[in-house]
Length: 307
Image (cartoon, rainbow, N blue to C red; front, top):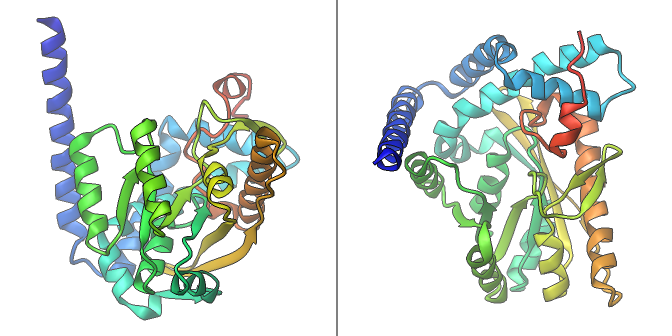
């Protein structure tokens, strides 16, 4: 009986959250793109530092930039909330952002489009840079078909809305969680379909690979697929140029060597991935998604927020 009440209460909370999502989506669906993005950045830059998540941000920055002055880290902790707020609002306007060719500058796109033209699948990897939704949308708009590997949100009603909104600009999502999700994505690769992976999410079961000098359990699936199918990894990033205008960059491939030592090859590939993500972050630290916990829980417990 108590268990049933708990399930009903959780379902009610989920439905209320989904209702709130619908209200926000309705408010921004037809709003001016730049004005709405500016508003989202302004709001989160002021409210974000008041939330409990701000402590995670401060700890992340202490782990990533121990050599910085504390005042500089605190300033960055506040500044990065602007990007979070902008992206939160831009999610509801992605079809309109993608439809405006002046909003997305594309750099080195021929590297992936040439592969697609010859029927070779691409394993694209990237991190939580700027508005990372723009990256997949820009590739799709240029004719590259594929699946984005992702972990669904806890709220199934909100997750259904996210899937629907992404389908509006052609983005198909494949769940990576569990054995069935991995098989689904491998089947797509086997058929020649491309895959995109946000590689910097926390993954408790992954190998501990250095990231900003600290061991971080790293999602191994992209390297495993590359080894299985004899592919390299195509690195990509996105930068915020101004407001809701972006530059999507296709970088050099990461070559995955297959020496026959599976574990050594896996860890070597993952080290290259983390080095790529770290380099992009250092170039534009205010545009990174510092709000998630990338390192093991024990590191956060012993890392002060400062002040």
